[in-house]
Image (cartoon, rainbow, N blue to C red):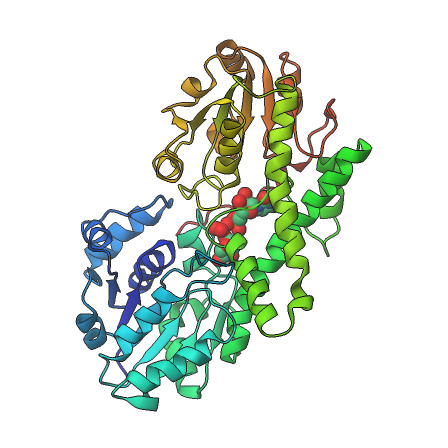
Length: 462
Ligand code: UDX
C-alpha cells in the first residue's frame, strides 16, 4: 500500500488557493507556493487575500489539520511534492487578444530545473491548445530527469463564489495524460472525488486543453444568444424575460446561463473566448470559431445599451446627472472587477459627464484600484442619496431585496435601470418608479418570470 502522494500547488490566486485548501481538506499533505510574499503571509496566517464565500472557514480547518503550509520557496516545493499542480494566471496579453503564458512557463521551468525524483507536473491553468505539448518538451529539456518528468493537464471549471463547492464536488474531472502512469497518479490525488462517482474523462493533452475553452465558449455563447434576442425584443416590443422563460422550459435548451442582462465579465469568459479565437486563427481554423467575435461584440454592446437606457431615463443627456451605480463586481458574491460590465458602465457614464456614485458590498477596493477617478461610497443609501437615476449593475442580494419606498425616499427622481433583470418591475412601478430593463418594453409586463434563471445552485453543506 503506497503512501498518499504529497501535493504542491503553485499559484495561490482564486484557483490555486482553493485547490490547495480543498486538497488538504481531502486528506493530502499540501504545500501552497506563490512568488508573492504578501499572499503567502496572509494565507499562512489564515486569511484569504480575496473574497470567496466559505473559503476562509475551510482555510482555517486545513491549517488546523496540520496538512497545509504555504511557502515562496521553489526548492522546498520540488523536494516536497509527488504531484505538482500549476495554477498560475493566464491573463490577456497587453498587446493582443492572445493569452500571456509568462507565468505558466516560469512556474513549470522553476519546478523542472529543481525536481530530481520521479514526479508528475499537472497544469490547471487555462491555456491555448498545444501549450501542454510545448511545455512537455520544455520541462524535459531543462530537467535533470529528462523524459522521466511527466506532464498532465487537468482543467478546472470552478466558478467564483462557488469555488469550494465546485472544487470538492465537481460535475466531472478531465485528465489529459500521455501515459498510464500519469493517469494513475491523477486517480490517486483525486480518489476522494472519484469515490463520489464523479465521472472522469481521460483524454490526450490537446483535448483536455480544448475542453476548458470549449466549455467557456459555449457558456459565453449561451449568454450572448439571449442578449442578442434582447436586442430583437427591443426592436419589436417583445419581452426577453418571457422569451427566456419559454425557451428554458425546453429541456434541450435549459435555463442556466440564459439569464439576459448586462452580459458576462470576469477573469475567465471574456479573455478565454478571445484567446481561443486567436489560437484557432493561428492553427488555420479561425473560421470555425469566428462566431466568438460576434459573441464578444454582442456582450460589449450590452454595456453601451445600458448607458443609452440610463440616458433615456435621465431625459436625453447625462451631463451633470447624478447616477447611483449599484455594483462594481462582475457578478454577485465576488470582489472581482476584471472585465466587469458594471464598472465599465460606471466608467462610460462618468465619461459622458454624469456624477456617478459607485457602491459594491465587496468590490469597492478593487474597483477603486482599477478606476481611481470614480466616486466610491460605503453604502447603498449613500449611493442613492439625491440620485437622478439608480442603476442596478450587479445583482447582489442587498440590491435585489431593497425596499422601493425606502430607496425612493432618498432619491431625487424615482427612476431605476435594472441591468440584471434582478427586480420585480411591479414592486417598483407600483411605488411610482420609472423602471427600465434591457430587452423589455418601457411599460414592463406585470408578470415576472425569469428570476429563477439566475445561476444559483443551492450551496451544499461542504
Ligand atoms: C466561469 C465558468 O462558469 C467556470 O466554469 C470557469 O471555470 C471560469 O469562468 P466565473 O467567471 O466565476 O466562471 O463566472 P460565471 O458564474 O460563469 O459568470 C460569468 C459571467 O456571466 C458573469 O458576469 C455573470 O453575471 C454572467 N452571466 C451568467 C449572465 O450574464 N447570464 C447568465 O445566465 C449567467
